[in-house]
Length: 389
Image (cartoon, rainbow, N blue to C red; front, side, top):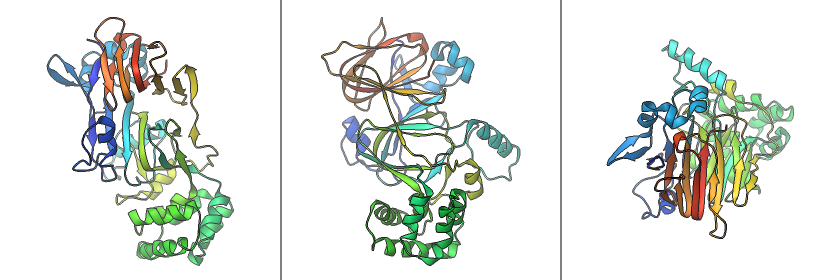
């Protein structure tokens, strides 16, 4: 067998949904605790497993024992003996923290500096970047990238709070970095009162931004990230729509179920909406203070029922394949390591020879490089993660 059933690991972060992943997989709901992310890949923090005989084997070990066969010569040469991407099902039952991820060169430099000096804050878990994309499975809300500072100045100015005048002034001159620093460095003793005043003022206004501030403050009282969130694009995705978070993009997922694909890293710099530490100086080094005019990542139709998303990094690519039963099976070209995630129906994932793996909603399969081209057949929807040639 060279196409394997793949069993992922569910992480139980507090913001996770108690129903979404279980409903996708057809399990009883609500679950005992939150289920935030289903990890599918070979990240050392929580590697997925495949059956070898009657024994579940971690994907990290499978790759370490035969990197050439599992990854292929091209992927091994470019990335070393590791799977360069991580696929997730993300279920946001509550807003996640505002966050950004470092560029590759900076991640390498910062991680090396941190490892050489134990006195430095432990901001980085590895030396890799973490660009990521998300495709919505349900209606999904997110904050993604800075909107024009003039729009943010109008919203924050509309609160009518005199002590926010320096923030409004910074935004009116286009100084996004200055506005973010002012908010995240707000005196700790005044944060609770500030956000209480923001909520009271927002209740007297109408509009999405003010409703967002009220909702975020209910989850994170006294957190200046409530105001930082108002500097970002509020994005509402329909199922099948996608967003792209490159290095330095400040973003936060608010609610909904989606499929994420990212470089295999866990480097996160937080910028609020969290009880965890926010390193303001380090975050400002990572952020890109550029207006993001169009937060959506637009897909390209490659063939009937096949949508691909192009991203400007070499670590991963994503396709969505919809099989209706009235079209022939879809042959997925390429010989690198692939993960196939079921989103609906029942799909058979197989190579030219051998027994196919049946993938239902919330199930996954892993095809190593030595499987060659694989075919998906049946009736349903799958997402396919791969490494671009």
